[in-house]
Image 1 (cartoon, rainbow, N blue to C red):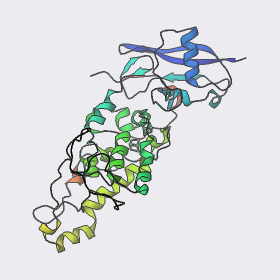
Image 2 (cartoon, protein in one colour):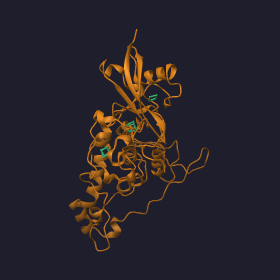
Image 3 (cartoon, rainbow, N blue to C red):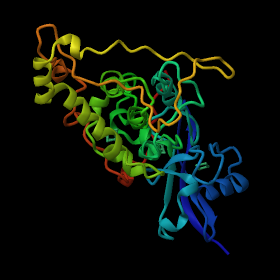
Image 4 (tube, helix red, strand yellow):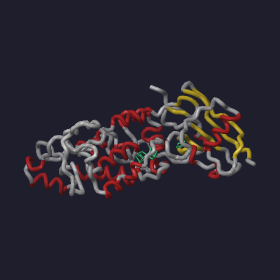
Length: 332
Ligand code: SF4
Ligand code: SF4
Ligand code: FES
């Protein structure tokens, strides 16, 4: 036999809404998504909520529970005191469609902007060879279920819609880091691209994204910080600078990046003999860019996207109860 508990759920659409009160039965072992389903079955059949797997794997049921971005299907009711009111609101960073369903297209646009895996020219699918250690190194990032809780949490866009065009967000920083570690990815500029085009410099490594990731991906420590360090190394390492002074430009300059051709099933791409070659890499040596006068470019220091303290302040989770009202960003 369950107990009645008090819930507050945001109801509304893109024209407005507010938080409504419900008393719902809760049974042993239930999660917040069970309560939403019971609400739909008994009191509010029109309550909109996105979900699919109820197993923490599809990334659909992202919501904010007592101000904390979480998966509804992985948040046990035993997390809360029996007398505690549980407030459920939609993801705050994305425009609301209805009730708990938000429009997360921002993330798909950023996914589309991220350059895809680029295998070395002439190596067809089925011919890729890499060492197990390289497979394991980026395995952590491939666990991402695209729940976008990290994207919703990051203060750079959470309260600053105006930053969205310039900032891809933590989910796409781990994608850049994953490809940067990939020995067969022929693009050498992943971290430079992250800095110049994905807004890596906006991130001030607050680790809020890591804190909410249901897959426990160490987004900040294992992806963002190493990429930031390598961007700085390439640009400002005095040894790299010395190397530039010692070697002639024609000994250092790299051939321009050539994207690999798209391979379709059954296409006759020339094969590369990989038998007996345990490691195949399309990478060439990397060096810091040097200007015509032989000096390294320090323009990055003047960019508004450089690393450093955030002008936006940090977001503390869970949010104080007084801040739980939902204030959605407007649709474009
Ligand atoms: S560490 Fe902080 S600023 Fe950087 S991406 Fe994560 S939440 Fe955003
Ligand atoms: S990195 Fe974690 S929080 Fe971000 S989308 Fe992937 S699984 Fe979700
Ligand atoms: S329903 Fe799939 S992650 Fe929650």
